[in-house]
Amino acid sequence: MNRLKAYAWLTFCVIVWGSNFVFGKILVQDFSPALITTLRLLFIVLFLIGLSFYRGHFKRLNKSDVLAVFFLGVIGVFINQWSFFEGLQTADPTTSALILATTPILTGVLASIFLKEKLTIRMLVGSIVAIIGIYFVVAKGDLSSLHIDKGLYWIVITMVTFAIMIIMTRILSNRIDPLSITLYSNIVGLIVSIPFVFILDTPIIISSKVSDWSLLIVTAVVVHGIATLIWNSNIRYVDASKASILSNLEPFVAMIMGLILLYKPITGAEMLGSLFIVGGVVLSTYQRKRLTSRLN
Image: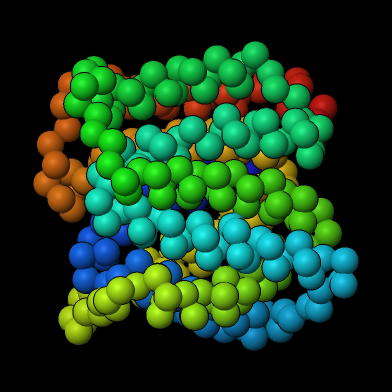
């Protein structure tokens, strides 16, 4: 696959995931966090099973991969999603996106350890430029405007588990097809999540509105079903550390979606920050044509 095309699909996934900050903030007002996680995973799994039947695609895992897929389901699916919704109960969506934008730093370190990928100067500079942009978007140029609450600690957990998910998916994608990785890891996440609804949610909150259920189902299928499947299909063609740098776009997407859905105005500082974010991502992921052709 053309590397540029792979980056385009990965960018699409990040845009979808960036919108999830605003949708998640809306959903946690009407559903408790662990219940949201279980319900979303249920609809994701139903979608993936239907897709597998449609494609006639059910492959058994090798015994050597079962344990890895189990840990991916627990860490990269269940804990990642639950901590996200737990954090959004109190955390601001855009500020949460700032925390997750630091994923490339941790992913780069993990990739250098487990995947033997190189940490290049271009990636480092691009990450710094993007983080400067995130500072403007979130803090509007004033660090004192950042408010740290307990929700952000859970968002940090989301960031760590996301970095682990990227590394584990990158490793597994060399042996397992993307649909199987996505299906089996989400089945594990669903099964593990069910008892935690009764342990973690006190009380259990559930909406009776059709609009809330529609938002939950649609975002579950699109954000964590279709987008994750596309991500798993394309991450094999790029370095894990470079793919994770695209997460710097999420605060920008969260800002735009906040304007559209929450009527949160965009300031000049936020626009300047968005330019830094996009510039940093382009700088980090761009490679000269000659080098790219050699690698393809």
